[in-house]
Length: 127
Image (cartoon, rainbow, N blue to C red; front, side, top):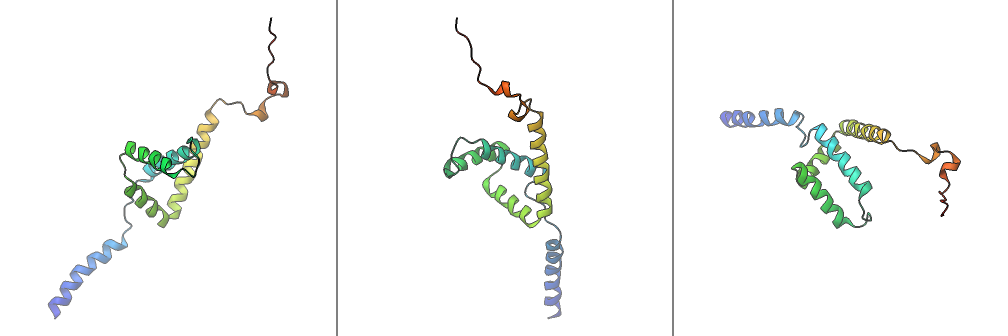
């Protein structure tokens, strides 16, 4: 009986030790950041209505393929980061900051920055 109990403890203790350690994420924070940004841009720029889920699934499949991922790994990454919301918040903050920097770097003139006469349609005189 004593040998059985020691054997059981020998098997269970390492399992408790490894289960108490923080598991490694399926995608690193940097990989997750890049993936989230690409998914957000895809959602914003896709020429399909949001209800057309099949076309969105195909777009996502293309993204996963380019990155060497599959849907199971991406799903497990999102599940992992859902358990660690502080890490996910930090990733999302970096994505938002990066997208804001990219937007600000575009040499775009916003309508509120234009003069009223610049907003009027151009009328060309035909000769």
